[in-house]
Length: 134
Image 1: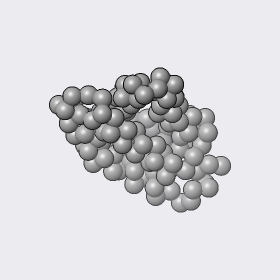
Image 2 (image 1 turned 90 degrees about the vertical axis):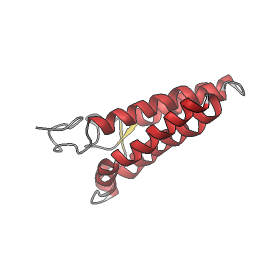
Image 3 (image 1 turned 120 degrees about the vertical axis):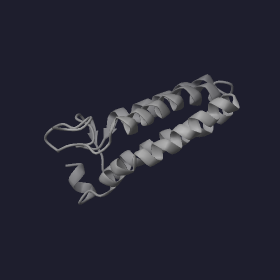
């Protein structure tokens, strides 16, 4: 039996429902807060932020982490993309939203960092980065 997102060929995934749910909720916060905060400065930059935040993880993925990778990348790239999502969620929630909402997003991001440790370890412990992209 494979875990959430496991594709059978690469074995079970170690991240669970809580970790995936927290990561997804924090990503949604980033997708909303970032353009919200940037729209006051430039609607074009706000729109581009959404394209970057949603587009990069959609296009670039680590084989074995997601069933379909459009462009295969090593695990460390996926880790950096997640950290980008978490950082933008926290920073732009403080710039765009009331304090209670920003605190909630910050706590979600912190919980995501904790619950994502097994996934992060798995992504960073690949034999070699070139093996993931071939």
